[in-house]
Image (tube, rainbow, N blue to C red; front, side):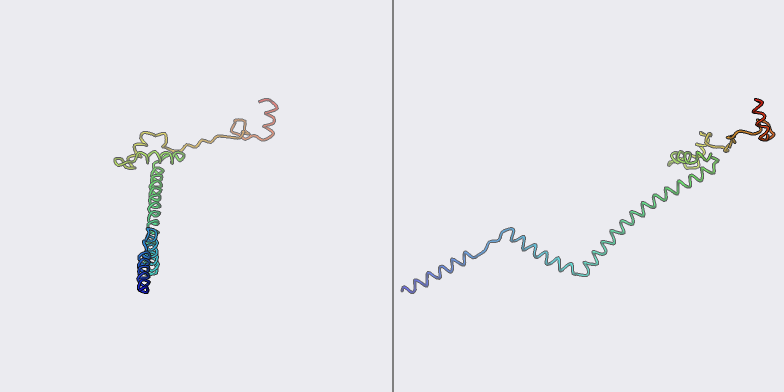
Length: 168
């Protein structure tokens, strides 16, 4: 009988050990397992040709968007420059004095809005500010002394020295 007791005791010890070996999982274990699965799926997915094509398309579409923005900005800048050049040309044709060309162009451009077009704004500005329009008058100013002593006849060097000596 003693033999039977030994067998019974060993069976109970084995059952106790089985119950104790059941493992409980922590949140960290679950997160690690999940992340490992995601990593494996991600590497398999990234090898797919469709995914590579998608990434290439995404890159080019972003570049296209940037190009569109650059071209839109350049278009606005060139349109503004073109309008300014046309306005400068029209103001130059309106008999403005050259030294006031940029000023008058800027002033007339500021007058243009939804109700007044450029031509009417230029006419009104020309009427209100005639000092900026008209023929250019060039005055010749003599910057060197005359040798003719104020007369019409050119004097020689001798005549000039004689006039100086005489005190004339």
